[in-house]
Image 1 (cartoon, helix red, strand yellow):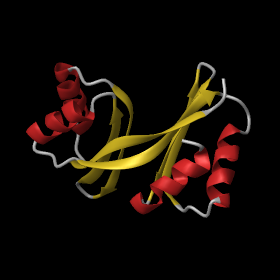
Image 2 (cartoon, one colour):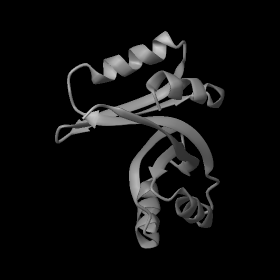
Image 3 (cartoon, helix red, strand yellow):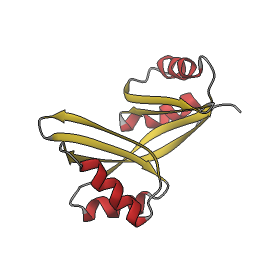
Image 4 (cartoon, helix red, strand yellow):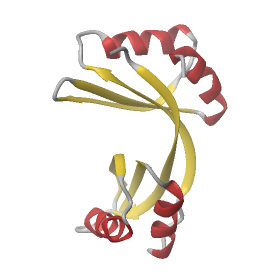
Length: 135
């Protein structure tokens, strides 16, 4: 299988950098039946953290987060997935660099012979990022 890319909507919100913050979010997602494809969370400073998620139902996920007192914002990113083979990530990064797109962030992982990554860039650059990756 070749690597396939697509433009995805990612929800981003500030969360408290405290014990159990993610557990509460995921418990609420579980109760609401929200299926999360990928998520990222990281501390920004004392007491502050960011949470990003790519779900199969962002409307439902946004409702859950809003009910929890969060202010989720929708942004676009590019998601790529395919077979895990040496050089795939490097090839994608080269396409992005060749297109002159500065990434804000990226995460990549592989498991059970599969590879996936997400690319975050300035929202104005998302159309060019999608073009560069063949989305």
